[in-house]
Length: 203
Image (cartoon, rainbow, N blue to C red; front, side):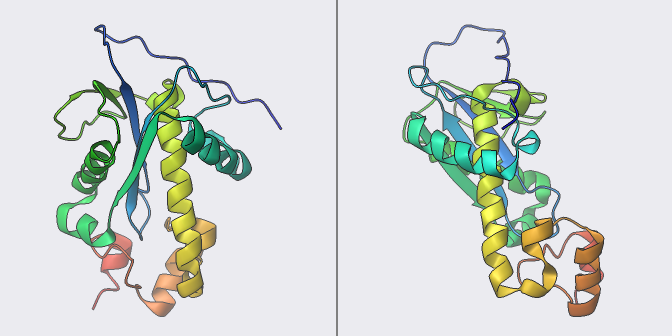
């Protein structure tokens, strides 16, 4: 199995004593399904090898690390915002909602939350946005893996109910196959009706 470059811990502008949580999401771009967020507090005494941005890992490696993170992290939480909430709030606000739910679901309260990207959800703890944090901060890498695997498994499960759309293969993204299925069958209950390629087929 090829080696994956480990994340480099980003230096913070202040000293923090206490637990640090990493947060990331999966599923902002697809046309269907929830956006999933995860929050992870790693255990420094029980390190996890080969953590990296979920997008650069193979599905097999992601599945392996999904189990490793759940077994070795001090605590973790996985949350989502539904397709209905995405349509009601917009994708950015729904993503922030899913991240907030993930942090609030942690069994242990963090002193600092590091969020991948350039936006921070409304939280009652100190937080910082880290650009490309999923490739720099191990806890964010772990969160990206939990979110990605959870959403991919949702797509595989939903594929069983609506196989005509091909969710298991394209994970809800606007591929040619997915757009052709939309034209032929119209949207299913999990399609995001506020997204342009879907909206034109909503009656």
